[in-house]
Length: 299
Ligand SMILES: [Zn+2]
Image (cartoon, rainbow, N blue to C red; front, side, top):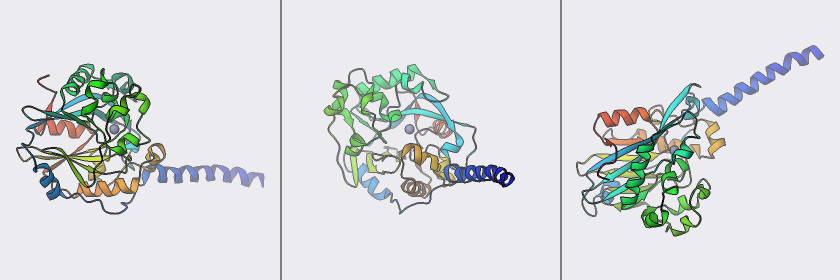
């Protein structure tokens, strides 16, 4: 009896570990429902008022790394490089910021991190000059730059956070100065919302309650879809695989909703440039292709 038990215990442990690996790391979620991206409606909303923006710039504020198995279900356990970015949409006389990365002190706590203090300083200067600041979602690596802006009171009226972002459980309210978020008027919208000509929001909850798509159309006709962290890497879209089950445990994301969104991105025409927030390979290739430009200018 004792011999039998000695035999079974390791077998049960190995089986439990194998099942855990399969459920937590290897298996991608199936889409739940259909996520609709109506490009004609986005184009109409983008072009309904005023001149379209002329260019997009990006600041690479920092880098970090996660195990690949945490980024794409079924991936290996080697480290996968990630970037911290902020984008800026420009007209001759106006600008809108999309996401603000996070402050160097916070970024340095991320695994495998490197911070570009000069890029962060340029981003803070651009935040002060911006006519609007929008966010793909409310996580600290996207709202952190605004949370730590040196004088929040002067930019509060430009901070365009949705009600879902402002009330989301993943918004780190403690990162903001006391009372700062009370100065921000929650943005409520249904369907699509044009922040400005050429910049349109569409809600896409799943990764977080306040996740939204940000569609940008330039005067050149170039079309961009900022999807934030719905995809951490374009591999999530190419391979039809979102993050693994362990991500659900750690981030409480709705993996079925995210899978449906990834499926919708995969069906977009190739001239719609999907921008995943943390993909350094796609960033380099987009910069090389001249789709947008490195470094915030004219500050
Ligand atoms: Zn992120």
